[in-house]
Length: 166
Image 1 (tube, one colour):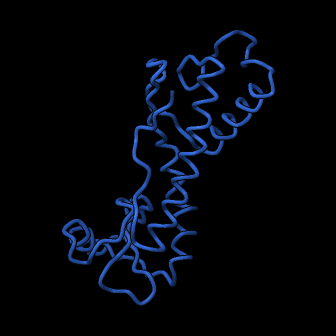
Image 2 (image 1 turned 90 degrees about the vertical axis):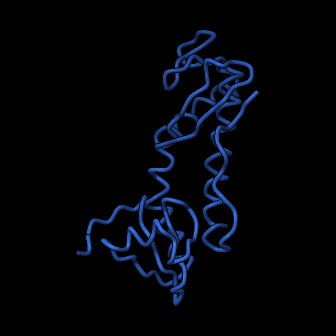
């Protein structure tokens, strides 16, 4: 029986006329149609055929990457181990990170007017937050670039985690 439940984060696509490999959103990679995980998945589900790599990038950017960024970035801080952990980078969070970092960089201090403040359950200083914001921005950018490279060329991988800051 073929399942009709579409799960973007665990789906396979044939791209164009290619039939010997499929793109796996779970692995962020092309896999041969003989791949054991794909074969097991295909026993109950039918892969989607998409017209081009460009169309696949749009689908993945719209439907897979939001979940990827909600799962977030794993962070390691060399200077402040209390910051170690996972941080969600959904659109609202990235807007907050940008706004807070911009305010700090403009000399307005940290939110709340103290010397430290809480963000996603962690106590930050100005310097720590600017390092974190830079790492988060780079992680989002590098993830999007990596996705495009993987889809277009079949090479590369998503950014390695954890991300380390000073």
